[in-house]
Image 1 (cartoon, rainbow, N blue to C red):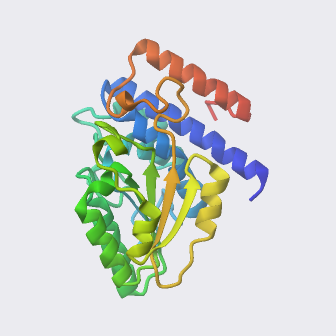
Image 2: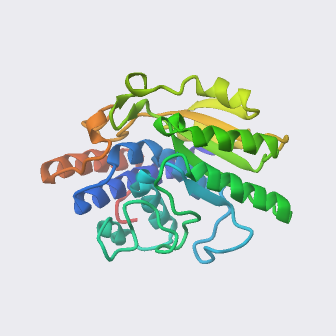
Length: 283
């Protein structure tokens, strides 16, 4: 992929991070840390890889996406808004009682959502079901999902992993957002599911390990996905709070919204990054 295309994706990711901050600030609640870590993956999927059309969100032949770590909804909403599913300004309505942008994705509320998620461990099972349905129907679509690393402590994740391999669902790609922090601390402090590449491989999956905040590495990994009778797990090492200095690698920003001063600092940093990339906030 050309350097210019990568730059455009990096610009989109920076704007999506602005959307995460905008949404959580206006909601006065939410999960910015794990949203910011997942932005680059979502940007690559929706702007480069997935076959989707905002004008036809229910196209039966579209690729599917399931946000298994549903609390990272601010990131998904920001990317969907940039992709044209709804106005970017609507991100300010995050978590309002009468809004379409609920705290966790609700497919009844918003076009472009393929599954309602939030209870950790369950999203990947839904993705597996979609992939199996595609196989049975002879469809060519691919199902993508993002799990949290802490989420991989849930037993249901591994039941789904076992079933996906048994059914040879090579139309399923699961990213693990491995930022090494969950709500109560580091993975080692809570209940580490590592080593994840070896575990997914033992369950019969193709596996890769990448820098999940590197656009080129994400794109390269997606290009290397094979239809060889196995689902694919991409372990994406990321930085929680990526792009906002005081949020990076800080467990306290798992589920806390920025105040006015923190909002101003975050937006200033992201605007500086956007300018460095040659982008403009109003484009």
